[in-house]
Length: 153
Image (cartoon, rainbow, N blue to C red; front, side):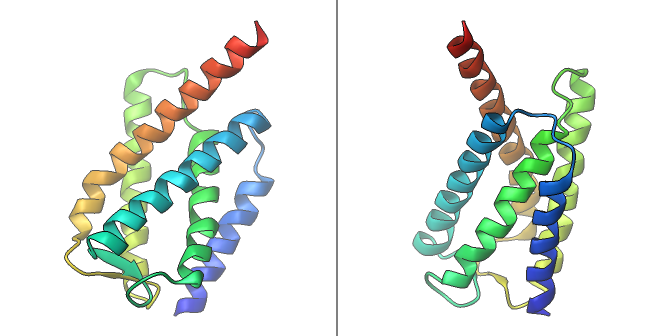
């Protein structure tokens, strides 16, 4: 079962690499690094400090870190690349909620493997956290766009 998680993550990477890009390379680069750092820091705190969940066994795992790179990067690219930034707020809300539902379902599926485990963390915590996480990614994208605009003036 574990191999399917990595195959899925690698497939996500191929998809995110080959989809037509709507964002500038610097936007993709900076927002992807932010998403990766944000995710790793959250996991460090919630996994290693509070021991609420983890990858594989307790403590740090190199293969868990690899999984984070293989997951956070393509998800942030796909989510932000198609985010309806200049559409009405209801479209943006629907987009964030859709990604949150998909992410929660994906987490539920991954929980069925040995890749990820919960230890006090509940799936519904993730269902609440995902919209906030995706909103933070959007706020970061807007910040990056503002910085780029200021730099070009």
